[in-house]
Image 1 (cartoon, rainbow, N blue to C red):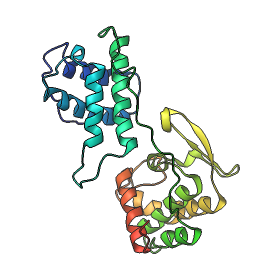
Image 2: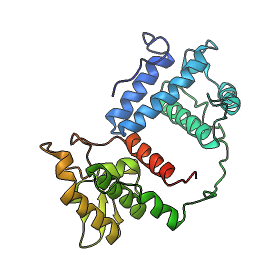
Image 3: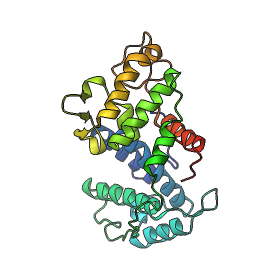
Image 4: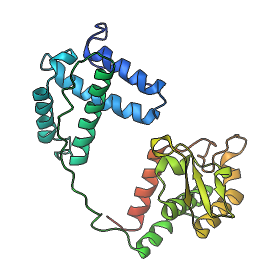
Length: 258
């Protein structure tokens, strides 16, 4: 993937910038998901900028006290909309730091890990206050225009998500050979943690997939050769953000503000 250069002086082999670049390369070569590497890069780049503003350029400059100051910075930080970072977002950033510094110790770049004793914020474990009711879900599903290939595709995707609880990328990465109609299961390849798993799927969702495959997919894929079940109008893989927009639009169309 294409990313902006890391902040700081990459010419110093013992500097934070060069060492972060080495860490990200290590993640890639050890087969971490590209999405994970990209998120770590963005998260740790923010930490680098914070350090450089305080003339902290090398890992030995970073102590537990420095990390606790950064943790307080995250707590008081306000986003563009004026809202604070959620506890889970703060915890995510600090966890990325802990893993990077643990790696620096394993590489014998640091003798002691300053992040080892960093205490993460305790996140509140709450269920959604207002989950969608069955009638609301049906209203969202009904927003798909069955007279168009895109509408039929979208309906099939949403039926799969509702039936299985798959993540966006998992649903969009499905191939027809991953579906076991006899056992009513589907295979998720390289899901969370790059692990494969089988997931049950309902007969209704399977019926919508088959309807989409028979009536809409040939018109979308045309001559494009791809094993993916769900494709764009050009026969390519859909982006996860496209799926999010579809869901938001359907929620709005159904008059649901949850």
